Image 1 (tube, rainbow, N blue to C red):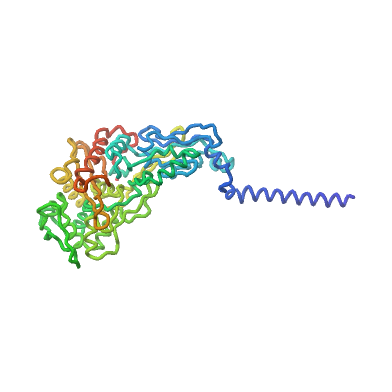
Image 2: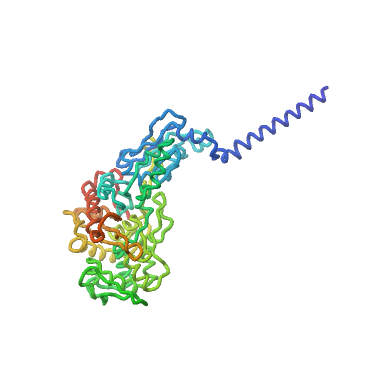
Length: 497
């Protein structure tokens, strides 16, 4: 009998050991896959069981959470949702997260290890700390000025602080209210279908995810390449440029919208946007130098994040001379986001240095204790300081006496460049109106802001569209909003190179 009891005890011990091993396998080895299984609602219940952290603009939260008393308890709310949608994105219980809601999800959901009282505490307890905050670099007045300026027309605005790379405004129109996607049910599904079917693409972030032909605003890059390579040594000397200009190797000619472009100096050609001069300059500079300069301004960079990804602006690396000439005036296959063109203007204002643009100043605990702070970093040196100085002079001429006079601001030095970009089959599409600029208070040591505006304006009459007439007033309003309160932004810091 004793022998049978021993055998039974041994067998039970083996069963117990197998049970413990299986429990360990499930809880340790398979825990990750089980947690991530779509059929497991525990993760979703835990995620939405606590209020989400806030995205902060100018010291005030532009997001919140509301208690629904349902199983997925807290839904995301937004203050001025359409205004800040290109910044916050959405946090939906059905469709996930985008933009800052996605890039900073660990902080906003309370799962970031930095929020835990002890290292690896949340991993051990499988709990969640109180959610943290994401403090943005956005200037509320600049954001509102950009949004009001577009007035619902298709387009975008991006504004940067040149000396640091802080993004001061990021606006896309038309926009949408992300709160309408927050919860569950038929209303959310219907709104999702409506937004995706809208021909205006309100969920497309045109400021960072849409690329456009930059038109004549790209002439800033071409002028920099011409000066850096020595093709042009004096801004006021004739450039030996015919009008019209025959594209190399073709019978196609390029003409201008204004008179006086034949053999015009670089200064005159820049102020009055002579296509023939810049097409010839691009061909004379050559493909290698043009692609190198475009790269140094930030083109063809597929890794840029702010912290969410930005569509790469492109300048083709493989072209014949005719295509290079067209690309040098911002046409052919040249494409740029508004953020990229704000970086171009910023480089001119900042002595040739391109700062890496960023949207998050810092992340904090619920009590405001900093977790991570974003520092200013140099992305590229686009050109020498002397070339940047010459470009600043020419951009000032554009605003003071050229095509960009609508951007002039009393008490400030403003430099700009207009652009009207053709597109569509046979260039039959309504042109895009561009304006890029920078502004510096006359009593300040450094430029305060660089901005890029593009207006698609599909409903406008073709002849009424121009960068100076349509886009420049919007840029002016954004720059004025920054210049009028340079000390009021708690996110703003001093000079950094």
